[in-house]
Length: 315
Image 1: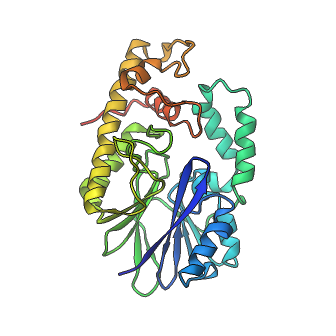
Image 2: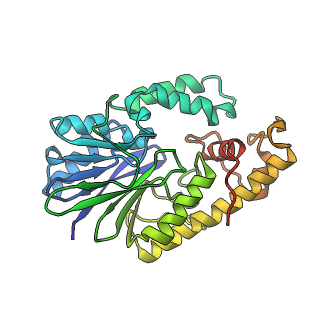
């Protein structure tokens, strides 16, 4: 049995989860923000009798700043010996801080009515991302990575949260690291965030019905329907519950979003004074009263996804 050590880093209202896979060629799944490797990972590993310098694989579940932000810094701490892995669709977000600004402008930034949003996003990318870099290994899903000593990790494509989201599975023990591909009812914002509803749903179904994790490791303390957060490691029963709840909330969000779009004749949505404009109807149907301006603003991310994708239907 290959041991897994959770590495928790704070960031604002969110807890950032990274994981150390204690293989002959040790791996870290996700890297938090720029300060996480030196201030969080290195001391935690030292306390566990491990060394950050020995990490040989950096496995990134997707390209958002709170998952790739520490990648360059961690790579430096390994003496630039670790191999950095990311899906080809999210690789631009590792290569360029500007890609994060473009994502903001093309998505939720359209609705936030924040004239300083672009500058604020650019400043956050500069501060939180430790360095732009070229990945060593680009994956698409379906690959197997060898961590030495017979320990292998399978790569599963789980698009939806981002186009290049992946899950990593330690073969033979059902330990699956999903990053943000399993949103349940969201984290601190109380709303799930994804850029392609149909792909998100398909990935959840594949995780539930085909991959069937025996241990599930999420990217943040995602929450149940009653608002209580899941822990850092979910057993098989909790994993099934989290996956089913994720499917259930997507169905409800999708129904509300589609009704809102029908009412507005899709792209004829009208601006109002509501902070949820032009999707106030969806927020009302869902009873959602969270602050839609709090980054990462999953409400607008998901609403924009339903607006721009013909998918999102459930079955």
